[in-house]
Amino acid sequence: MTVRTSSDFTLSGVHHLQLAIPPGGEGLSRVFWRDLLGMTELDKPLDLESLGGCWFRGGGLEVHLVVETDFRPFRRARPAILVRRLGDLAHHMEDHGHPVTWEESHPGFDRFWTFDKVGNRLEFLEPRNSF
Image (cartoon, rainbow, N blue to C red; front, side):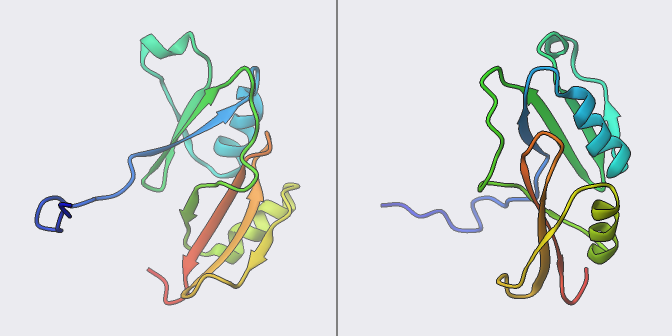
C-alpha cells in the first residue's frame, strides 16, 4: 500500500461548497445567503443557468446552491464555516429568525449550528485564539 506524503501535494483550501435546494428555492436562498449573510450573488456560467439554483461569494468562500427535484435538506451532514466575531453572527441569526445551538465539544473552537431557509444544517465556528 502506497501512502502519499505531504511532499507529493498540498491541499490549499476550499473553492466552494455545494448545497441542494428545492425547486423554486432560489428566493429563500437569496434571503439567507445574500441578505442575511451579506454574500454577493454571482452570475452562473451560461451552460448552468437553465438548471436553476444560485451562487454566492463572500469572506473567501463560494456557495453553489443547486436544485434537486427530490430535495432533502442536510440534517446531520453540514459544511463548517469559519467566522470572525462568532457571537455577533449568532445574535444576527437569532434576530432574523434562525435559532442557534451552541456546542462545546470541539476543542479549540467556539461553534454553533443553525439551519438555512430550506432546512440545510450549517455549522459556524471560530478558533478560541482567533485567527
